[in-house]
Length: 117
Image (cartoon, rainbow, N blue to C red; front, side, top):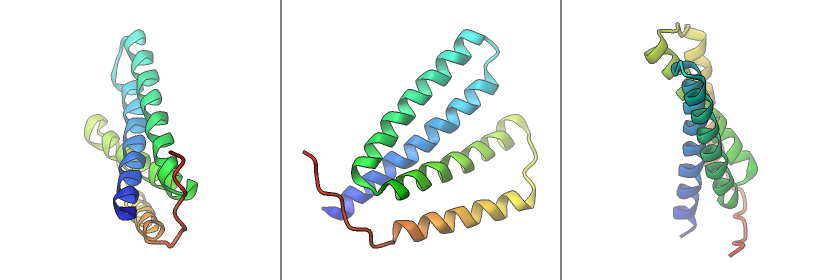
């Protein structure tokens, strides 16, 4: 069951990172100020809910780094595909190092949090 809980924690952390990236895309994509602000607020509320759920399962380090990495990579790729922003080779090198770091952290032997339920 602990493995399933950790997996669920990472799903929450990745969802938080994707929601944060979607907030950034919304701020740039929509021209209507009302829609832009509404989408940014909605995405950030969803991001905080997902991040809080990830913190209930993972260590704060694992949740934060996974959230950051997902946000960084998905924001960069969204910029490239949606807004035709250039991604230099250094960006890909940095993204690969972040992914490796998240993988190492996910395999670390951090003691599980006691359930607060």
